[in-house]
Length: 94
Image (cartoon, rainbow, N blue to C red):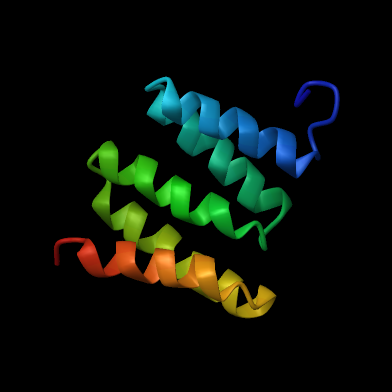
């Protein structure tokens, strides 16, 4: 689906999640970044992208994506996802 319609945010999110769930975290991160570049208000991409980065040990990058995700959720009014991202951010080591 992504090959047929690269701008389809839902399809790209599905691809990123499938990569993450199958353990291909590096590809998942790439897809989450592509999704965010195309649709900066797709809040779930920030949360799950941050989770994938954490699993890869890329904590500073996870922190950055979470912080950008909080900004995105403020723009979109998505308080539920903002709470999830804030909780994940607060759990990161300093």
